[in-house]
Amino acid sequence: MSEIDAVGVDEFEIAFDVTVPILYAGSAEDVVQIAALLSERDARTRGQVFLEVDSADEIIKLPAPGRVVVTWLIKDVSGNGRLQRAVDAWLSEMRFGAGDTENPLIVWLSGRSEVIGAR
Image (cartoon, rainbow, N blue to C red):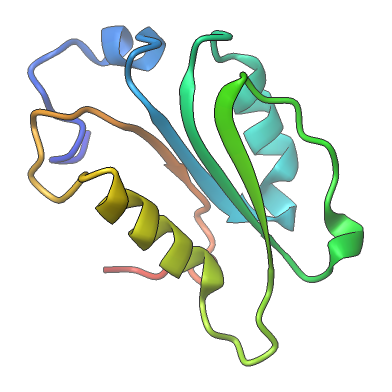
């Protein structure tokens, strides 16, 4: 567990607590994995999904709990990281930060280095 999700609560309790928001972020290659993760969530789950794709042709209807927002981002041709900026902005808006032990958050980020930059 990272510092952000180390809140003194058993990991399994956090994973299935519908009051803990989710943040999933990835690319077109991650849609199947993210769809599987969403299918396991309770209908009362809240949170955000960001998916970055090359073109609008890759956007599909992605079933998600009613309080989970799915946002599709079209890749910027300049290579500027729209996905990274969207994740950073959401975390900032929701007031999650490194070392935050008061606000647990369930996060799944793509393992591809070009999708989410290392910090």
